Length: 467
Image (cartoon, rainbow, N blue to C red; front, side, top):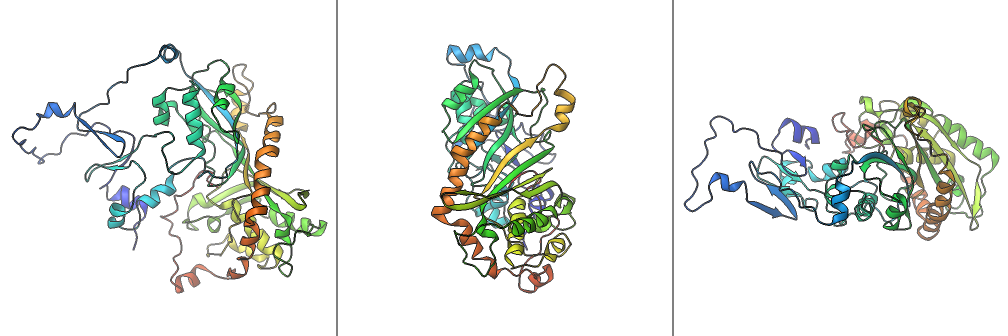
């Protein structure tokens, strides 16, 4: 049987995953006598000056420290004498064509270190990951623009470096600028109100210079100074997502799977909102994500509100927007929340399945396509109460930027979702898979057919926002 990641890395302690260069080695254990050096080999002190590159990543040997880079260029040298300031950036982007916001999250670690020692060693590793013997696995520094998995942060960090807001070495190791994002949006997911925190040089015309080096479908819409210890993920009280979908998704299962003439009736909209309101409050959402057991405390999430707005017509097709505000969300949670309501409204699943899905048994919950999901806004109520009116900091409400946010959605996000839906028919294709779901299946039944119920030890894939 496979070993969980924590047991694999933590308990056995054979491999150590580290970000960036190796830390100085700990003293040798007693009994590990050093072997004599072969004739002609370098003396121990000479090893400190040697270094090698494997896969594009520099690996320092025992006792070696990275050499300081010489500053080149008068502008960067002058900026280097200025203090960096902690700020937050309001971002908007269309996620189509990207593998999410962040590169190499925990999901990638699960893929790297899998179910057995042989797989952990022999599986293809991510680019520039270096195995340095049986004691260390050196995780690569960031090589901007070199990853085969294109992410939003790749383009953002490249623009920050090219605009002169951060040194080049900060782009290679984002910890140096204290970088943090509010939400780890998944592959293809867009955002109209993503917020990241970092330390930058506050150069003149900073927003214009950053945007000059970004593609048109990624924009920095605002910047505000924050306290020195501010962390955008930890200080975020809640997140609001919206999900744009064609209303034929709510048509009864007896109708054509993609009936573009369908229009959402007031009665059906009322039913949809009644079901969505059932999610409000604290529930156990272990059935709405992957690899989380029902006994895990992190599977309990608090939803403040969830509702569907009045429909509208674009290009002859009717759409509606579902909005959900919660403290935090797990991977795929929102898409499964939407998917289950669609299955109930269409007549594939009973309404009682909603309450049963919060119980301890395993329930088959369908996952709606990711195309229509958008990070709408992030909230900092507690931070604003403490620092928003202290005379030194601005409240993080982005009221003045609402016009630019709305304009970006209308120009880039909504047209991309609607155009892709028309061309690729992602919603219609997903709807055609609903009849094959077994909404009465339980974890016991899954075990009888060779399935595996999630173990409480395995659910570490998304304690933050990963949808």
